[in-house]
Amino acid sequence: MKVWAWTTAGVGLILIVLTYIQGALLGSWADEHATVSQTMPGSGLEFVVAALGVVLLVGGVIVGIRASRSASVR
Image (cartoon, rainbow, N blue to C red; front, side, top):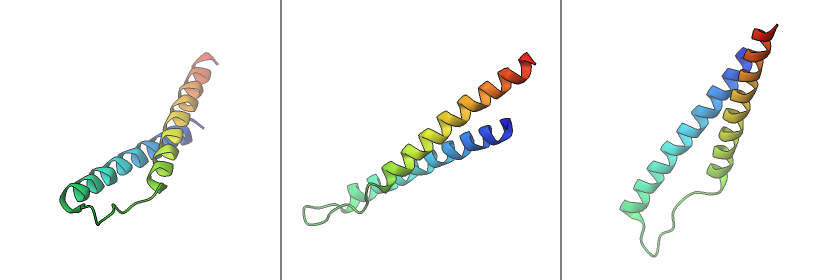
């Protein structure tokens, strides 16, 4: 169970990093191309993916720490 918890936390961290990179690329595009007549591409999907990453990271770390403590108590 501990391995899956830390794997889930790792997946959450990867999602957060990839969302950050996507945001940086989108920000660069906006700086270079955005004018009054053009709108930035994108949707709320990035926020959903980032929120999922945070939930996976926090949940995985909490479960991983609890599994480590319960294994050391036994």
